[in-house]
Length: 430
Image (cartoon, rainbow, N blue to C red; front, side, top):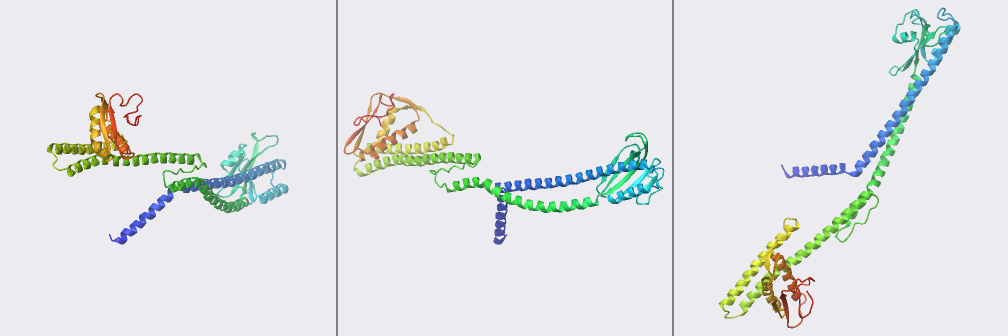
């Protein structure tokens, strides 16, 4: 694969990632929710209105035809039309109703023979249909054929003195009424509804864009404030628009405070590490310089100094090991290691190590032991703490002129007041 293919592949990956990021956008999801909700609600509303309009018109027209045909049924009985269908009044009325309703009217007697057809094509024939049979039984039947757009009504013709539902049914009136005019009106309203629905859709899209931008604006402010907070000292200003954004800001500020504390701790740790690692190296350098500056040094002194240098190297190794354990302890991997330790011997070793550094400041360190002290301590950490404490006293704030620094071990070490070591020249613990 050549370099051009790699470039094309990289560009394609970038485009795909950009599209996926856009799809995961909270603003886009709010926009789609509003759009889908609005369009679904609008479509259901218009569909419900149109269906209600259609159903209401059909029911109204059916009731109108049923009432009119019952009046005609009474006229047929009054004029004895089933026995003699030559009445011009009834024929004119039937013809007029057929024209008004744009339909067809059939008069069927008890023998299911058609005695009158407003279309004049089925007179004398017999009609045995389910609706006609039900009508002969005294039942009023209504049907709507949506495919062919007509209403079918069957009205029983009761004899004189008989009520609807009685047994004296002399015939039925079968009426078919066209709904073409109504269908044309329905289609006109439907087209107007589609136009209005399109306008509403455009309005919904505009509202969705505006609302999604308004809803996500507080989150954008949180992101902007987070990006502008370049240091740990800056708190993100509160964004009280939503409880969620307020909680997000509070959580970030708490995390920032913890990060700042961790950063300060690391900076202090690095500073302490530099001091702790420098102390043994300084002691070794002073010991080596002392040997180099003296002539005809006895072998015993060489051995003592080399022993001291070896101890400083071991101490350096312990410090490094302990620093690694501190890093692990920060992760919860280890803790303090307590063991029985002779405090007098430890202080003598500390004075021996710090002696060269103190002498450079024209200070002599003197150790005074009142009694033997043994305690369960972490020897490495306590040595580091005491060394760093005393070394800082004579390096950072060296006493002016010649003097003595006395370190005692006995009843005054970590007494009930927790004062620690005492400077007998200055008084008080330090």
